[in-house]
Amino acid sequence: MNSSTIDLHVHTTASDGTLSPSDTVRRAAELGVTLLSITDHDTTDGIPEAQQAAAASDIVLLSGVELSVGSGEREIHVLGYFMDPNHRPFQTILSKLRGARDVRNERILARLKELGASVDPQRVRHIAGDGSVGRPHIAAALVEAGHVASQGEAFGRYLARGKPAYVGRERLSPADAAQAIREAGGLSVVAHPAKSGLIGQIEDLVADGMEGIEVFHSDHSERDVEILLGIAREGNLLVTGGTDSHGPGSGKWVEIGSVAVPEWVGEELLRRAPQAERTQR
Ligand code: AMP
Ligand code: ZN
Ligand code: FE
Ligand code: FE
Image 1 (tube, rainbow, N blue to C red):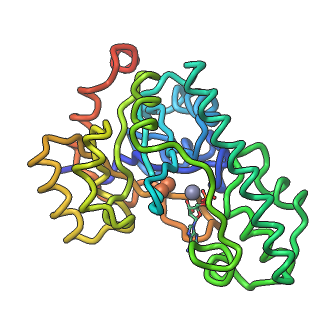
Image 2 (image 1 turned 135 degrees about the vertical axis):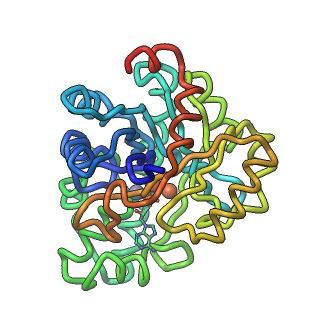
């Protein structure tokens, strides 16, 4: 079984990854990836550039996104595949979510200032480039300002949930996220359920409209995969997998395509693709 050619979870500079969408696609192609999805946080802005690069390679690129949704105290990541990036209501929702990030980031910077670890908001904006701003960008600014030695330390001391500069943000409910993805022509998948401690909540999330679970992931153990495959089989859920790579030099770098995702995962996902996506092949 050829198992290292599928990667359905990759971030780019459109959010908090370090490689541009086209460099991501080129690197994936060099590494032998044939089925790829770019899944940036709360944005599909990287997709057109990635699509162009994919057209010049052997890669089949699926439109993707990763939404942070809320369920009480819990943060749940939801992957969306096959959405039409030009679907206006979907883009309106994404831009609201990015707006909520900006509000939160301001509050994080205010907390950091109180804690004696000031960073310049313009540096954060500059580090994020054109992309959707996330905590990794603030972590990079903290390193740059000399307040911490590494991005890991920035999360450990300040930014992780439960740490003094952690601030939550307004989020969609799981049901609203699933509906938004569906209306844009996409399928929603619960991202890294074992990593997020959501194994006991999968049934509820399926009731909310999720159609699949991410089984294969760089932070999932073999045992996690076994458990999740059982749940997927029992609930007749779509199975996906990917690395969650954020590119070289990111906080915790995982190489694109380095998680073994079986071929049947790609085949079954493509079988669910909207017509347009299938004829592209
Ligand atoms: P945000 O989207 O702004 O909430 O930031 C979430 C991103 O921060 C994740 O996708 C990870 O890339 C990164 N992240 C979250 N927690 C940690 C951590 N403890 N150490 C390093 N990076 C983290
Ligand atoms: Zn990320
Ligand atoms: Fe995630
Ligand atoms: Fe991710």
